[in-house]
Image (cartoon, rainbow, N blue to C red):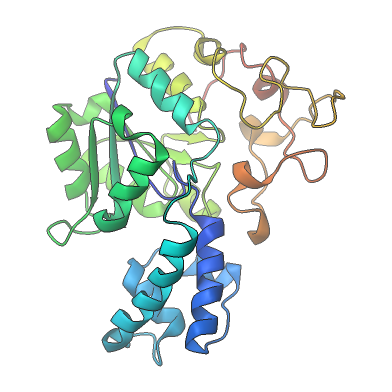
Length: 299
C-alpha cells in the first residue's frame, strides 16, 4: 500500500458540531424552523446547496432561493468557523506517521474548494498532503469515482496500491468503483448503518487504526504494535490508555465485533470527538485498550 486518500469533512475535519450551530443560526436569520440533528443527518448526503435548500427553501427544490440561503449560512460560517481548527484528535499525528513511512497522502472531498482549501491550510495539514482534490464545477460529486481517479493519477499510484478512508456510504461506493480498498471512518460517521451496508473492506473506530491497515498491507508486522508511538487522543495520558480524566484507572468493558460501539445518539455525533471522560465514555475492548496487541481490522 503506497497511498492513503481521505475524505475531509467527518473524516479528518470535525465539521458536524459547527454545522448544527450554523444551521440553527441560519434558520433564525431566515425565520425558518430549526431542523433537528436527526433530520440534518438524514439529508447530509445531498450536495451542500441542495442540503440547505431542502431545509430553508419554500420548497425542497427551490433552487432559485439557494444563493440567498447560502449567503445567510456563510455569514455565520466566516464568523464562527473561518479561523478555527476542527481536526479530529489524532488526525495530524496520523498523517505525520504516514509521511514518515513514505506513504503518499491525498484528499478527495465534495466540499467546495473555496472552503476546503482554506480549512486545509488552517488545519496545519497542507504540508503533509501531496494532493488535495476539493469539489469544483469540473468534477462530479461522489460516488462518481472521477475525483478519486484524478487524485490517484496525480499521486502516480495504482488503485490496488491505495486506501480510501471516508465516513459516508458514497465514499465506500466511490472507492469500490475506482478499484480502491475502502475504510469506513466510524469515529465520525453519521450514517452508521448505511456505511456498513456498503461493506467497506475495513471499519476503523480510531484514526490511528489507518496505520495498522497500512502495516498489515505492507507486511510491517505487528499491526497496532507499529502505531504504539502515536498519541492516544481519546485518553488524557498517552502512556496509559486506562487513565481516566481524574487520574483514576478503570478496566475496559468488552464491546462486540472488534471494539465496535453501538450507533451513537445524534448529540454524540461524531463519537470520537464527543465521548470523553467517565460520563458517557466509550469503553474499549481489551484488544483496543492495549495498543501493542495485533488486531485484525478487516470486516
